[in-house]
Amino acid sequence: MSREPRALLALLTLAVLGHGARLLLQPRSAPPGELLASATTSAQNPAQQRARAARNSRPLARGEQIDINSATAEEIARLPRVGMSLAKRIVAYRAAHGAFQTTADLDRVSGVGPGLLAALTDRLRFGAGTGPPQAAGTAGANSRTAAANRPLTGAVSTSLVDLNSATQKDLEALPGIGPARSLAILAYRRENGPFAAVSDLGRVPGFSQAMVRRLTPLLEVRR
Image (cartoon, rainbow, N blue to C red; front, side, top):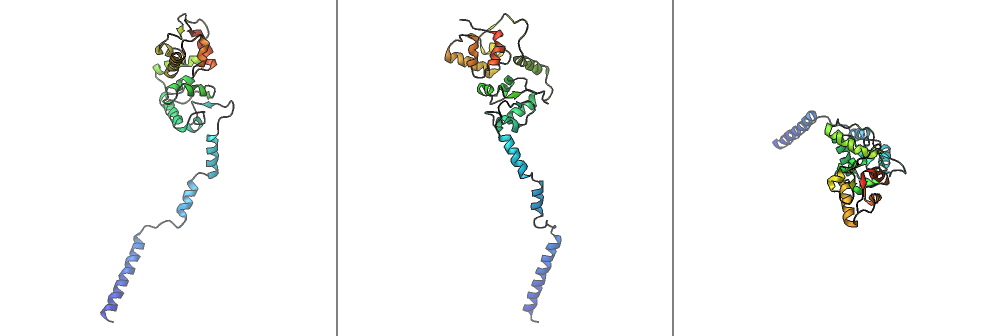
């Protein structure tokens, strides 16, 4: 045999041996279709995904309420004018500061204002929640705001707050009045002039008639 054929045969032999070595040393790959089957098995059932999406996107029925202290972000996002981004901020605030006591407490969450508070007034429940223990100062503040949801009984202080001269600090001292509501009162007074009666407070965004009734014993209108 001439040198040229022998050289070609040697090169072919080396190529075969090299390919065989690679096959022996390379980790065994999954059989075709195995990876796809595994991913399909671990994925959530498409029907369950559709059902969950439909459940979380449907608007609240008439009279339906959301427990703001136990609901997930997806459930909170079903509330009117509350998207997923704001719902996540509400859940994060709840986890950091504890359960909400009244609708007014939501005023402390970034993105919540008087208009939204008014829209949520009849849509929320306030369960016990599972937030972290509250410090004494926080608990005291929540006790004061909780008074906004309880009927006022017994003697009422003779030092009434005048809606036409009260400062933001005076208004925030009232039960259930946070920064947003106090600013809404000042804006209404600036744009519409002095209040003619305490009942006019119901025209301010963020104040339901029930809340006006609870605050009436603490307010007055001086001419």
